[in-house]
Length: 183
Image 1 (cartoon, helix red, strand yellow):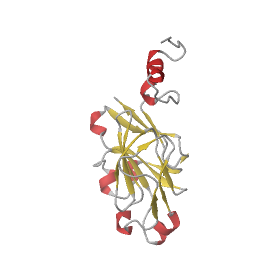
Image 2 (cartoon, helix red, strand yellow; image 1 turned 60 degrees about the vertical axis):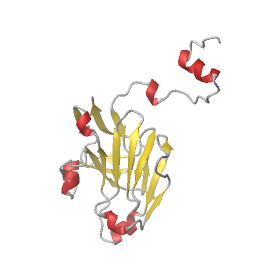
Image 3 (cartoon, helix red, strand yellow; image 1 turned 180 degrees about the vertical axis):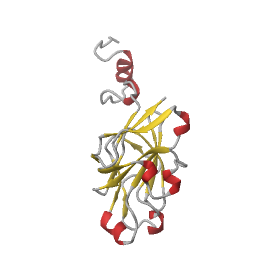
């Protein structure tokens, strides 16, 4: 086997045994600790979420988004660990070890899945930008529920700091920097 110095030894070994290679991976690039936004909307500080379980960081630290579009995407490559039966929340383990909970709305569990459409299943591998859940903002609001969506690092205690990068009230788009996690 000759070594392609452009890609390195790992690339050559992977190609030699016949595994498809699609470019740089998260594991081969340095982890800067940034989690991008899985939704588009207005940034909300976690402590301003109108539910004490989220506001007090009981389920993890992070940020929240008041969505302007009814779509949640994977902020990075990883695995779907949990898709709630009521379809309003998804738990991911990212390839970099961070565990995320994305919880659409406040008390939306009571909708029993109405207005939510899953695009993944538990155990699925997902890639950055892949749609996880779509939801009907107008329906959720018409039923009397708020759509503010906490994005939590469930294993926050494993890190020295978890901070929101997007300023309160700032407009964020899918893929914009939202949270910084420091080892």
